[in-house]
Amino acid sequence: MNFNSFTFIFLFLPAALVGFYVLGTMQAKASLKPWLLAASLAFFAAGRLQDLPLLMASITFNCIVATRLTSFPDRSRGRCAVFVLGLSGNLLFLAYFKYKAFLVALANQWMGLHLAVSRPLFPLGISFYTVYQIMLLVDCYENLAQNYNWRDHLVFAGFFPYVTMGPIVRWKQIVPQLNGSDFGKPRWDNLARGLYIFVIGLFKKVVLADSFFRWSDAGFNFAGSLSLVGAWITALAFTCQLYFDFSGYTDMAIGVALMFNINLPANFNTPYRSQSVIEFWRRWHITLSNFITTYLYTPMIRGMRKVSFGRMMLVTFIAMLITGFWHGASWTFVVFGSLHGLGLVANQVWKRCKCQMPGPIAWALTFIFVVITFVFFNSRDLSQAGEIVRSMFSIRTAVFSYEPWLGIDRIDQAAGIVWMLLGTFILYRAPSSQTLQQNFRPSWVTVAATIALAAAALLYTNGVVSRSFVYRDF
Amino acid sequence: MLNRLQAIFRDVFDDPQICINEGTCADTVPGWDSLTNIQLIFAVEREFKVKFALGEIQELSNVGDMISLIQKKQQCAA
Image (tube, rainbow over all chains, first blue to last red; front, side, top):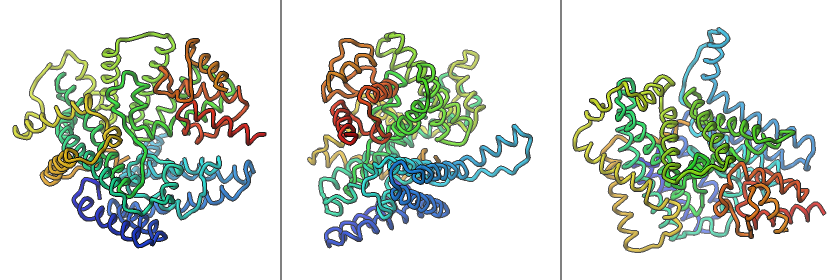
């Protein structure tokens, strides 16, 4: 079940909310968390039933480790050993279920083995729930997971708005809200604001992202014969698709959680307006960037005997390489991460030289860089990415020729262009969803805007085949 | 404490004119990114002889938070 499906919008979400608030008003507070957990497991099972045992296994393992961690005294050997065991268990879990096929193929290629390679779908949500449970173990180890108990862990780890695709959350951000006095009380302001943000996210996904998808998908399928203009249209369409897809999902997750009186952290802050690669990563997938900076980058630098600029740059590159690989078990993601690592290093060297660049040029260079790296992000393999990137910079190919999207129906083309122009306006001029949420005031204008966006989004949900989210496969 | 922190900021950002207050944050100081942030953290840890937990570093949103955390750490150590 996806957030952009009728089943979720008209059946699952209303039922989950009604049950939640009926229990809340009946003063049956003890039933609220089991209700949320049951709803979360039902949501996950409806998404991909066969992956539910893996989620349960991961939560059970981490519950046991976290409970043991909090029972040992500070700085004891046992505490350290349990922490290392928990961390290794999570990494092995992720390596086996997400990277096994990639690693086996690599072993076959480099060591001349003939092991069977199967490429199943990645287990749903594995990259996300593993990461935020690792953060929980670190918090337990550092005594920062206040009032840890396994019952709250179950709800924290399984909460359906973020279990499949984030945002990546910390215990401290969620659990105090589960135990707050407001939890379970009907808050009309939160319901209204949540619905408003949910509808904005739904519109971003089904109208904007899916319109850009038709053009990017047509282009990627024709990777070998794109003209220079065609290759740029393809890459730009995917860049916009990815933003509206993932930020649309995040808005929906934030909106749904808010309806249950839970505030989730922001994940995007108009990233395509960035004027440097450093700024881009402060605005793009913010919760992942925070995780990488705090739990990967900082310990790696702390572990060095002598810290120099060169070593810090090496660590920056390695951290981004891991970030790329986290997205998927493929060479395209390795290249994506490496390019961003190199981009960040180049950016730091530039800053160190105290060089200045006019804002519009800095923006253009950053955006072009991001567009090129996203070609690798979306390509099925390096050769497809290479074909598109070559066409983007080759003067040998035709500047403009017959392009695959000319085959798209003319009415769809016209509608697509209208939505894409609107999307481009949103990218560069409109306030971010975070700002819209903060400035939300119930008024007739807000009601009218919400109804108009919801009507357009539901029309598109009904009219076109529902597409899954890009990040759902990570 | 603010004066000692200011000296650290001026050194890390290589800017002798920089002036900080409790509300100073990454958005108000040009060049405050993950690299300078970690340099700041290490310099503060050295200066005040404290060690921040990873989760605590993530929670620091401005200089005021940093001062509160240093004071908390120093009280715990005393």
